[in-house]
Image 1: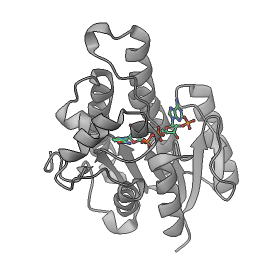
Image 2 (image 1 turned 180 degrees about the vertical axis):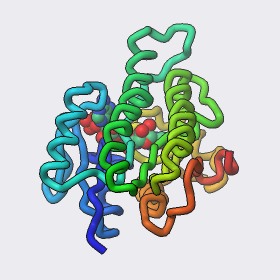
Image 3 (image 1 turned 45 degrees about the vertical axis):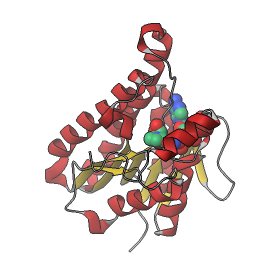
Length: 235
Ligand code: NDP
């Protein structure tokens, strides 16, 4: 079966890059988006800041011209701007919601055009365990990531009749640049609270996404699946 055109937002590093590699190994035709630093040269990439509607449109146009309509979307791009809500600036509140929720919604909406035409699509939204359990110091992030669950489940209902599935992956602590920025003591403490006693690897998130984007997963939609070492015990 020929590879499907697949787009991974934020595919230049971390969980996104591991996902690009996993889906390429599965035989898909994968394009990664990046902002400044492109992924390794063997990876097909387009520049796109998902907070800019014009860049989203341009990136999809380029992918469609070069590889055809996007049939598989992994909406992975995300940021944190941590701090207690009491002292949080409007800018930090807005940037996190704009990127993680609105930017993602924008990318998903654009991807739907081609999926609806083809009557086939696989969408995976990368949310977070924080969106399920909440996380002190991450009100903006947790709200945006919880928003992705509402977005994804509503869309799963809207698109179910067209063989378009929408699922949500909720990683816990994963070893990437995002968590490398945390103080060592906090990381040790966090790992100690995980039943598996360690942070996960990006590849362990990518493995689930690979399954959820495969043709075999065609009867799974609207699911929220943690990859968190048992941190939330399924919630
Ligand atoms: P990284 O910080 O390593 O990578 C973030 C990615 O998002 C980068 O590719 C970055 O691109 C991209 N990105 C950020 N802002 C934008 C934007 N405005 N437009 C386009 N791309 C953007 O993070 P992770 O790999 O850890 O995170 C990937 C996803 O997983 C995120 O959504 C994150 O919230 C989620 N997650 C991560 C967890 C963890 O423990 N690591 C836990 C739970 C969820 P650029 O290189 O240009 O900055």
